[in-house]
Amino acid sequence: MKILVSGFEPFGQDTENASGAVVQGLRGVEWDAGLEVVTSILPVTWSDSAPALLRAIETHRPNAVLALGEAGGRAAVTPERRARNVGHGRIPDNDGAPRPAAPLDQGPEFLNTRIDPALLVAAIRSVSVPAEVSDDAGAFLCNAVYRALLHETNLPGTFIHVPAVRTQGSATVGRETDPDAASSSSSSSSSTILTIDQLTDAVAASVKAVAELLRPAV
Image 1 (cartoon, rainbow, N blue to C red):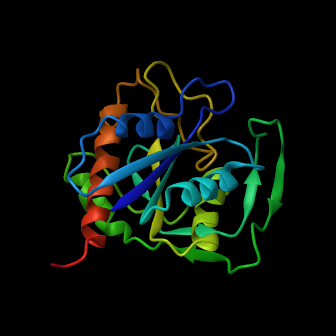
Image 2: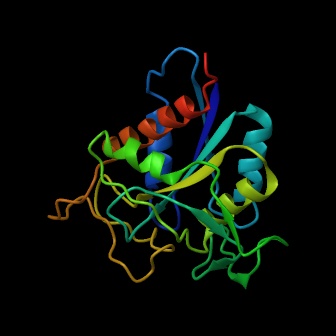
């Protein structure tokens, strides 16, 4: 069984992206026999983020895909229930390109995940990390990548948002999903602030849950 996990490169002036940091952390995890986890870091650009995911799928031929991104206004890990057919960048991407609101494809308004988000929430909570299902993946590149995964492939796949955790300081970007919410910060006194190690544990638990779901019955 092979599962692809993708995350994003740093965005804007930030030197970190929590989703990319989690992907790097997963590379050090010892997986059970019969489970191979491959990873990809996607660019934060409208021109190439979704194509980069599709290229990774073509290269690795995974059995399932978990795409990750960060949402700066969230204090829990949030598996996304659906992808919206709209792309919109309120600020330019890493190429400096704006994105007026417009449909991403010719499909319906929403496409639903192919992996039960409640299953992932239970797996994440089992490693003592807060999690809840989200019905809003935003309209930025996280949603665009999720939409491409569901629209362009038939693979079991989903998207998981993680808080925009930084090892030092606060995220200056990462709020594109929740632009009116507060940033995550490593120095915050809030007990809900998580670490990259905790986020890595949460996604590793999600990977294992998906592998178990897809494992053929003996």
